[in-house]
Image (cartoon, rainbow, N blue to C red; front, side):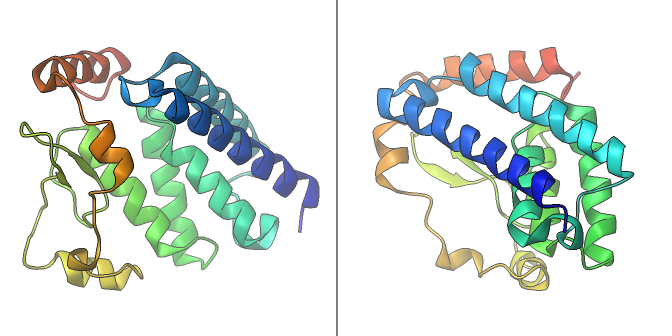
Length: 195
């Protein structure tokens, strides 16, 4: 195992969590994509991309351990300003899942995140968003009947066992849904998720 590489990834994940917690505590996290959060995501993604290039592929469990591989996946999952990096990471993770170097749920989450950002229905039901009534709900599904089969295949619990309503989402729902949607659409077009 490459311990220095693993440690670096764990530190990157910790910095992501630290900034998120600070912005959540101030309420700024929930008012659009905060520049400080985006800066961490971009910096981490650039470093992860460099690591991938250096090691010739996705950073799997045998190279950096299970927690290191999870940190790498989380960094890719949070790289929402970089559509091409996200798509490339998904392909690499899917290959690593087939090689038992990454967990199946990691590919599922990134697949759904990309679908959400591209405004397409998701497969596994991992992504949620506020609706016009200010209620957090599961983003549109490809197949309502088969979603739990898809989830089971990647080691996720049935959709019905999850709750998107918690204190954080209740206290921080958008004050102006229409404006939030408009800002999100503009951001998605600016970074290249949508035309």
